[in-house]
Picture (tube, rainbow, N blue to C red):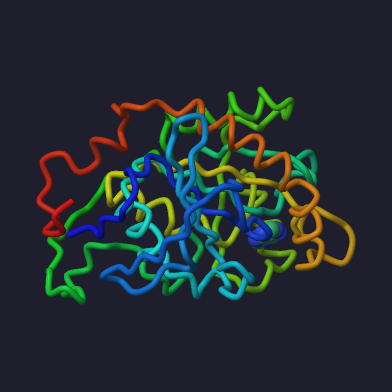
Length: 280
Ligand code: ADE
């Protein structure tokens, strides 16, 4: 059911965020179609230290897809169809605490969904383009991120001399607008750490396919409720991301090297004993 390609299977998938359009230099570009439509762009397959990696820019190469228009299901399905079992999801976020200023790297361990209207499941009972009808499946999502991937991300960041924030809550808003000061103050008052626009439904869709997912958040700004100036601008987000994308890429090299070849985490067992109807 999954579309094979003429290359060895991929192990690791990376979904690049704003301003992150290339991961490895020596890559094979493949186009992948899925039963959910087209992913954000071609996928770029390359080798890093003997690990086969597929990179997909989640907003498309020219950043033409706003967060609410991304076909998250197609993106996750495409990576999985190439063989990816572990997904790294770097993304730009706003800081919800004064000490999480631009340039802070956060590896969250929790997520709050404040999106609306996004398709957030493969198991919606709707027949797919290929005629397959998914079963009703309720995955566990108490701990939304892969515990093993998180440790690899923290170790990879430290190896590059970037002291990461270990844990915290990523709140995902619908966007594409930034938050009002009142919304932002509310998020901070809840004790949430960072705010972004793409972390949901990416993580849950990965879990629904039994994939590991690790969220890696680069703070590009202090969100409106925390800073005292004019509020966040898109230019600011892109500029800070651009300043940090080089070292983020270096961190990801170390993270990829630190990911285990064999999995035995909660994610790898997410579908144990479940009938999905999707030939996973
Ligand atoms: N991405 C980067 N900065 C952000 C912010 N302040 N709010 C939501 N998403 C963001």
